[in-house]
Length: 131
Image 1 (cartoon, helix red, strand yellow):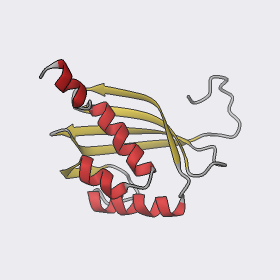
Image 2 (tube, rainbow, N blue to C red; image 1 turned 120 degrees about the vertical axis):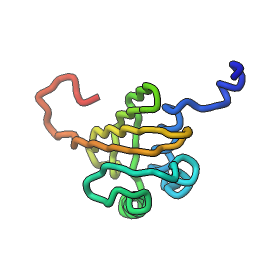
Image 3 (tube, rainbow, N blue to C red; image 1 turned 90 degrees about the horizontal axis):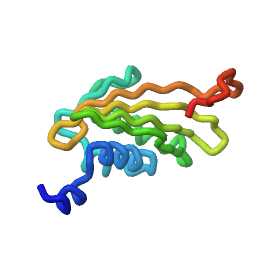
Image 4 (spheres, rainbow, N blue to C red; image 1 turned 45 degrees about the horizontal axis):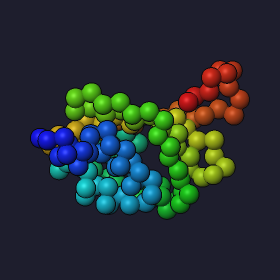
């Protein structure tokens, strides 16, 4: 692949971020059509492990939280794995949560997903903050 071809082909890290941005913007089905592998499964303990149940939950969350935002703070790629650390708010008044999404890719599509979140406390003893 030439340098020009590489610049046209997004990295897996860029793909993971694009997937998350589409989800937060409410384009959940588009995100799944573009980026989710046919063999996709996930590890969110609140939903069945298949693509359909997680997609429906994401759509329901967007209806309940139409002003949800996400700001990527850090993204790391190693081989076929990408980790994205984000500040997610369900609405503008929400302190939000620090969320880590871990993606495994197959054929340049998300085949496996983990998500871990920690609410941001109103008062923290840590002077460095969560980000």
